[in-house]
Image (cartoon, rainbow, N blue to C red; front, side):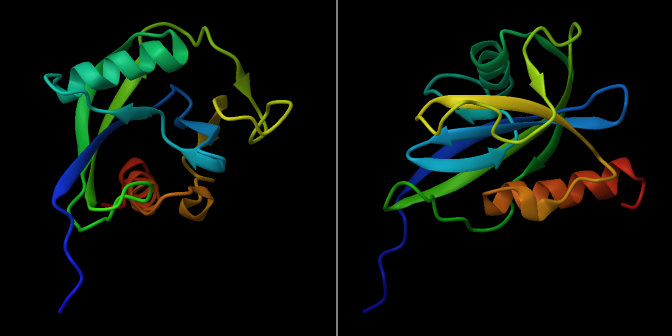
Length: 156
């Protein structure tokens, strides 16, 4: 008998927030007792559209509105959810810009908070040129970082 396939879906929506200096916003977080580097965003709530989800997540995480929102990528391969048994992960990424200059703290180093406590988060800009997919924690983010670097460097 084969392993049972996931029967539920977890949908996540992320922002590829691009600056005028060709940098992308990255978040370093300590969540679920784990260090993670990823793009800002989060889970889709039932009854919510994907763009509305991204707008809400940016307000929750950064207290910042976004604009110029364009679909970039939706997961096109199977990815089992890391934190839930019997769940398949589907991630949707949008390119966007901050409506105003950043009003939240931007760091120059990863995990710029005093201790690894669940809920701690810091943000930093990473130049697209130096974007390294291996620095991301999750497989889909790694893939998207690679695609974004190709796209913004005009290689795709």
